[in-house]
Each structure stands twice: as structure tokens, then as C-alpha cells.
Length: 81
Image (tube, rainbow, N blue to C red; front, side, top):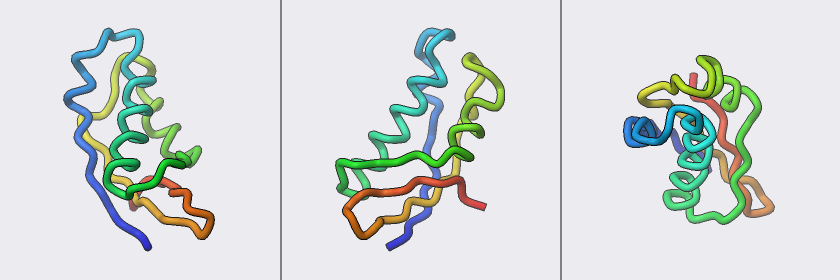
């Protein structure tokens, strides 16, 4: 099963500037856990690079991702194209 989500990251911008990208990664994981109903979420390296592209302080305001449920019950999150 595959789903495409647009995750709003504007709420993460209230975090301290030195922790924003780390908090955004955790926010994406929690969002996918909640919507795909899975405890095991794996973030693809390309998505991680996209979040970290502008450094630790400047995160994108929203990000479009594709969540794919794998056979072992985990979910792989990649950037949508």
C-alpha cells in the first residue's frame, strides 16, 4: 500500500533554531506512525537530505512524501516526485 502525504512543518518552526531539523525528522516519523498505523517507520536517505538541505535552522514549510507499507509491517518514507 502506498500513500502520498503533504506534511506541514510550519508548527516545527516554533522550536529553537538549533534544533529545528532534528525536530522536523521526529515530526515526520510521528505523522507517518499516526496516519499509517505502524510503529516502525524508516526514513529514506534522500528524504533526510531534503530536510537537512538548508541546514539545521531553515526547514521547508511543507514536504511531500510517499509512504510505502512493507511486508514486515514497517513503513518506508521517501520524497514524492
